[in-house]
Image (tube, rainbow, N blue to C red):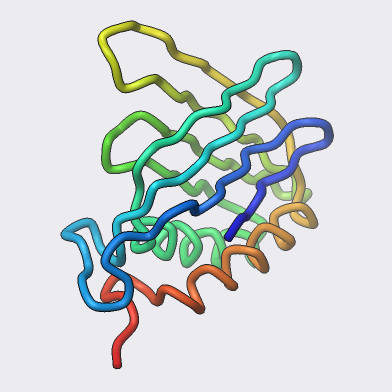
Length: 146
């Protein structure tokens, strides 16, 4: 399952390759532990990497993003539990969204990409629709309650 936060020519794409424990066993970060393929394109810079997150983190991010996207005002942040992906989405009152963050490899090297690009409310609405399909399957912080 995939969702993409698009900008004019840039994006962050999340593909949930494997979700562990679903539906029986949730993780302590909320929801289910997940291996996520991450693609970031920011101008001529790119990331193509895997990292670990949880469906609960995604659910919390989506809930905050829905509110800010409707108000067209505010800031939403995402930080993976391993700390290797962080970004903020800052809205202006015209519906433009500045996405700024960084991704670092989790190894002995110090490789890190700092990125920034501009999006708008219409692109974010599409991402929210894609995220909704993921959270509908995996539930919220408590996972799928039977």
